[in-house]
Length: 222
Image (cartoon, rainbow, N blue to C red; front, side):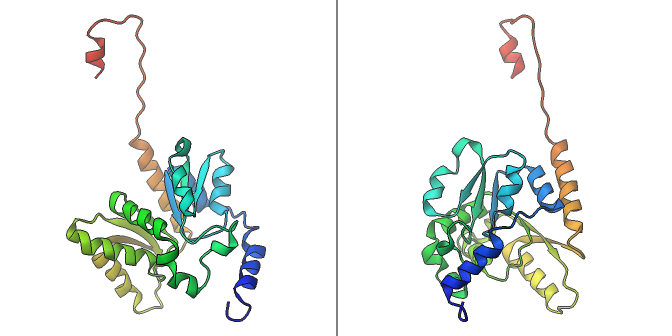
């Protein structure tokens, strides 16, 4: 940004990222799990395209006005915390953008904190180095004390960084994020597949048909 200028930076981002139609076993398993809400710091369209290929409808939420549509037809909500490639002026791409984030994304942060309180998150591919999530969790913890729920993260183990294990211990103890470390990213789709299998086993559909309707049938069926 300092070298090219903000406008030129966004132009270069658009030329490279807007063509991204990335597919991977990881994204396949994420779609299979059936999350109703997905949060991402990426502003490309890879997630949306992977849902679209399955004919699954989505809502992109990256502007304040988008929050009016989050219950639209029970679609999958994709919350794009750093903006969307279709709105280059609004993407969070520079250090200056991050510094102004609390002022420019008030509604996004408000809703994100609500979700952190009411839901359980699974963080994948997130390094926690931009402090966006940790700052929100820290604020929630200050107000709710020990009543905060736990979240989960899958992270690649960094054996070369001697401080990495302390970093993991810190986010586990202070932010209630339980971390599963893997030695290679290729392990993550397998973990998600196993998770998906367990979720499927907990889903039961019961159907019945009756040729006649007796007076006590309704009470019995409850």
